[in-house]
Length: 230
Image 1 (cartoon, rainbow, N blue to C red):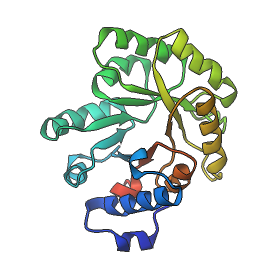
Image 2 (cartoon, rainbow, N blue to C red; image 1 turned 180 degrees about the vertical axis):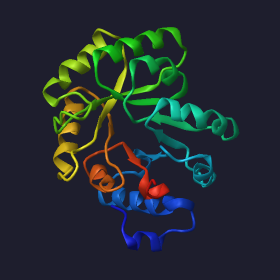
Image 3 (cartoon, rainbow, N blue to C red; image 1 turned 135 degrees about the vertical axis):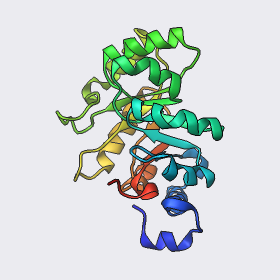
Image 4 (cartoon, rainbow, N blue to C red; image 1 turned 90 degrees about the vertical axis):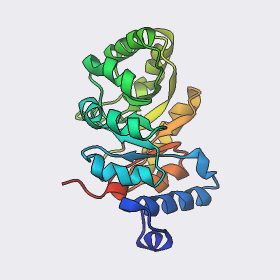
């Protein structure tokens, strides 16, 4: 969590980015990790170009969106002006949006079912692009939430690789609300390790310091950077 003290130690980067950057650096230091080992994804969902532009201008280049259509509406224009943007899809992906997602995003964090794997494999064959892929886990086995159950993760990862030829690079998880996140991060890291996956997409505004302690390579931070959504 970003502390009040952290904000007093940072400069004048816009929209809370300086606060988050200082907190990430401190969390990495406490975990004895290199800051470069953690990718900060600025989650810009629901925010327009006027809110995103100052964050880009401050040097942030990795952004996350939840919906393909929203991203299509604002990011091509932004990326034409600001080269070097890396765009991550962190929300659920409908199979009928796979073509657009592969064309636009550099990473997809929500691979979670065979039908999506089939659609992704088809687009990987037909497009020159190869977004980084993360399997989404449902570590709390919540019925309302997308993701693969931990007990099925090993077989699903194997089918992604062997049946569909998808180069899975890591795992993503979203712990249940109002539950301690550390056990869910630890479980995600354990499953990743035994499947030879190096990337862990875990941790958001309230718990990214814990996620860094548990080995996160990608943290998804929105409200702490952009403010709360209306």
